[in-house]
Structure formats: structure tokens, C-alpha cells
Amino acid sequence: MQTAILNPANSVGSTISANQKTYAHPWLPDQGDGTYCNPVLYADYSDPDVIRVGSDFYLIASSFNCTPGLPILHSKDLVNWTLIGHALKNLPHPRYEQVQPGCGVWAPAIRFHAGKYWVFFPTPDEGIFLVTARHPAGPWSRPHCVQAGKGLIDPCPLWDDDGKAYLLHAYAGSRAGIKHRLRVCPMAADGSKLLGQGEIVFHQPERHPTIEGPKFLKKDGWYYVVAPAGGVETGWQVVLRSKNIYGPYEDKIVLARGATDINGPHQGALVDMPDDGWWFVHFQDDGVYGRIVHLQPVQWREGWPLIGNNGEPVRRHAMPAGIPPQRHCGPQTSDEFNDVKLGLQWQWHANHRDDWHSLSGRHGWLRLYPQLAAGSMSEQPNLLLQKFPARSFNVEMALELRPMQCGEEAGLVVMGESYAALGVLHDGTKNCIILHTTGGQKRLFETNLNTLKLQVTVESGGKCYFRVAAKDESMSVLQPFQATKGKWIGAKLGLYSTKRVVNAAAGCVDIDYFRFS
Image (cartoon, rainbow, N blue to C red):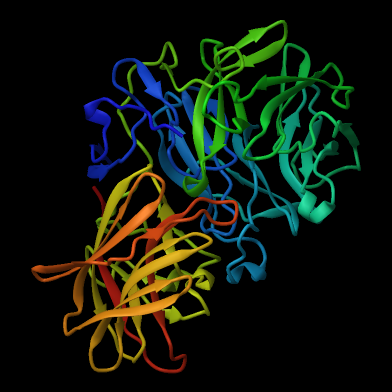
């Protein structure tokens, strides 16, 4: 994939002010000249759904095993986005206290109806759930199970003109054994339960061997289903329409890769503008970077939405018309840990507990309390991670290890289906700089210092180079690490803190900052 050419003001290392802080943003799509470059989010905000409420746009994404889940972003122009909250603190089942790669929250849908925000989301092993809130930043209700069942995925509601409610969903082939059927079910108007089995409204496996992620809307008397088909990496975008909610539905491919280098352009949301213009927000699977988010113009022709440039995705385009220029911004990345709450960019690797960290134990520092080492690093629930935010970037963190038992360890980790972690391990008398990889671990050198700086440079394509600095000395780790995607998610990077002894007092690690540059 080619990287968009940005104006100097938007190049790697540029900064913007947000909430009276300065954040480094390796990728800003707004070119400052009335155009934007795709992707508008060069990060793994997968399976996006977007709504407009007045002059505000809200985007929600899947989160799989990571918590808090269901990240919610806000924008005024569909190009400049910031995180404002999460709709789910922890996953609604105790099994998620352990890391469950590829499980958890799959494609959600967000809607505004009857004065509140509704998010329907699936966990493919348990069923379909609902959370609601009066404001998209929360607080959100506890998850309510709308329909229990294995393999029910990608729900989306529709409240019809007569007040009746319906829920559209797909099936996960890995759980249900089918992956090419869409079902519409009648639903209680309060979203509390389904009122019947409904009907399969689309099933054409010979033309669309996989169809999933459907979004439901009604326009000009037509019921529309916007659904990706053909698979994540190589598929296409389908729109279905019918005058009857149960069909029959006719189908049309409205976006495909064509002659571009944007593979599998699909799964997202049609969203209208205040001036009745329309846009399509969708993802592209970009391997180690996850499912990055693109924005495409839409034209309606003969009752069908035509997306992009005659059905092919655009790389660069004019900003949405009729919207005043916005402050250039992107989702939060760097953190000085000066707030009373953990930054919204951070997610734990499984269901989490609040006592795993503190922002009040030492002002201006994040304190992590070590949790018992759980097998390999990839099985550690208390990894505190964030998404890769661009194709290439640098990260530096400063830590002070304050151990009380032999075997306490903390450091910097890059996590995917394979991983690498550079950290400091206390062996009872001294500290050792240690490198973990999927294939094993290596002790690099010993030090009497507790305060260190750890750095990683990520090159385009995901090759990672680690460095460690103590006082005025620094050392590069000679062996580069190739980051890999996780199970249905992109690679992530962040912090870890572990211990080896259960029934003994443990110390902590204090993190001064985590900076992108």
C-alpha cells in the first residue's frame, strides 16, 4: 500500500493542541488546503459505524478482547476525529478475565433514537447485547442481552415509521457454520428482546460467498441494507434494497478495489450531511496496522448509492462541503499521565480491574501494580496497550522500577500474534535489561539503575527497533522485530508489569510519560 503524501504541516511528528495538551500525531488526514487523504484514521478502528446527530458525527468500532471496549470518536467533518469515550467497561462474561484472541466485541451499530444513544453489539460466543446512554461520552448502561446464541453477529436496529422495531444480523461461519445469510427479526421497541425468528432476507452464496456486517436504514420509502461481501481482505461493498422490510431484496455492488491499491474496501456506514449530501465510512484491512478507516464520497443515482470514484475508492478528495474548517486533530496518542483518569487511547488486553493502576499514587506518573505472569506475554491480561497510529513512528517512555520481590519486571511491549518486549527485571540484587520475543528471552545487560528510558522505532511495514537508555548511555537492541497483526486486530504497543510470586508483597513501576515523536 502506498502512503499518502502529506503537506509538511501534516507530516510525521506534527503536533496539535487538544484539551490544553500537546499531542504528537504521526498521521493527520486533513491537508489544510480543502482536501483530505485516506485513510482518515490510520489506526485499527475496525468495523466502523457512524451516525450524525445535528452537526456532530459519532463513530463506534469493534474492540474484540480489549477493554474498555467499543471506542467512540467524535468529529465535526468526518475527517478530524478524537476519542470521547467507550461504551463498554468490561466484556459481559467471566471467561474474558483471560485473554481471548479474536473473541469479544465484533461489529457494533450505533443509533440515536427517542432521545438517547443505542449501541447493539455481538460477542459471537454469547449473543447480542445492548447498551444505551443519554450522551455518547457516557455513562453507558450495563450490557443487556437482547438475544443469547452462538454465531449471531453484527446486529443493527431499525425503528420504522409506524413505531415498530426490527433487528438485522448476520452469522459467523466459525460458530454457526454459515456466513452468507442475513436475517431480520421483529424486536421490542425498547430493544429488550426479539419478538420472533423473523426471516432470512438475503442468501446468494454463489454471488456473495460471505456477507456480514450489515447496516440498516430507510430512505425515500426504500429499506436499504449496506453489507460487505467476499471476505475481509479481498471483498467488496454491497447494497440491498426493497420496498418491504422482509424483502425480497435486490443487490448491487457499489464499491470495489478496481484499479486502486485499496484492498477489500467495505464494511462501514452510509451517513448523511446537514445539506443532504452523503458519505461512506469504511475500513481497509492493512495487515499489521489493522482495519484502518477511509472516507468516500457518495452520489445517489436511480435509488442506489454510488460510492467513491465511479465505484472505486478515492485516495484524496475535497473535504465535505458546507462545513466550516475544523481544528486538525487525530485520536489521542502521547500521554504525560497528568490527568486523574487513564487516557482514552489505552486499553487492557482482557477484562480489567481498576486496582491494576493508579494516577494518584505519584502525581504526574502512571503507577502500574504488577500482576502474576500468566504464561507467555501474549496471555497477560494486564498489558496496557494502544493502537499503531501510523505507518511509521517513534515512541519513548520513561520508567522507574520500584520492586519488592525477586522477579518483578516492567517495560515496553509490541503485541500481535507474535510479540517483543523490552523491559527491566529485578533478580533480587540487581536489575537486568531483558528482551522477550515469541521464541524466548535474552538478558542484554545488568544495571544498578532503576530509572530507564525505553524506545522503539516502527518503520513502514512494521519493523521495530528497540533502544534502552540509562543516564547518558544508550544501547540499541541489534535484533529488529517484525511486528505482526493480532487475531482480527492490528498490532498494538504499550506497557507491562508482572511479578512471579503470588503471596508476597510486591512493588510497582512508575511511568513518567509515553511519547510519540
